[in-house]
Image (cartoon, rainbow, N blue to C red; front, side, top):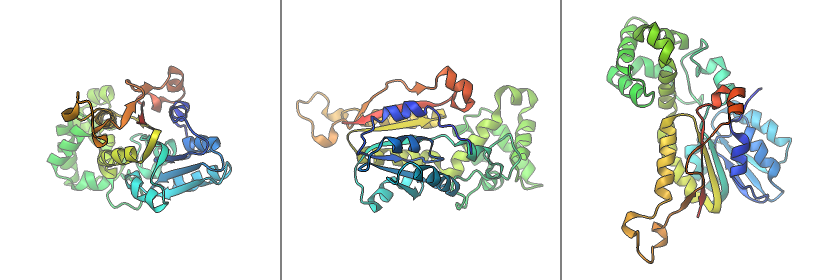
Length: 308
């Protein structure tokens, strides 16, 4: 199974890994980064990998078991980070990574329905036991809700005409295939706009965010992760679209600044002091060489912070 971890070396370097530290890969995937972390840990170190995808967990277990047994794989959405670590009697960690992109095997697996280039059922669930699918969204959401989500989550300016066309088509037939939806989008916007602006990318992104509640989950987990970090501990987050990057940037900014009320005072209560130091003011992006080798890395942005 081929999987390429975007900016893997940069992320591993960013963690400043201590051999006896506790590290969390909150988006385990196919263990591309976890395997690199585990290689750097000694017998006192521990790696925890979190993923809600059963296929990814099974594959990663095989990979990691060949390196050492100083790891635990947890079946969960990373929104449950705090609770799951408490179950392992862990209340502080030395580093954590979030790779918010979808792994190549997930995208390439036709039956998962993530790709707008392959015919598949409209699914898009990261956790295949979840109830809501992209098919449900496309066929049951009100037109005004589709417009809202396509515009907000897909940042697609022709959201209105696309939503209207979807509702028109589904009156006569349930929309249940990925390429069927792509054709509906194309017929709504016209071939010229379609091939120039690729609205199908944006609509599929919006559907994926809705199905997996990605943005709300991210807003919840980042403060939890910050509180879990030991002083000097690092968090590295790699995003692949502007909505996620904006959330990460804003949360990091909030936690790296002194509360406005106390600015300029000689003594500031600890709970109001800055909790983070931003390591890179501007996000790190993939090198030209990496983008050439893996086109999926072209939109990646890496932000790194340290607990103070």
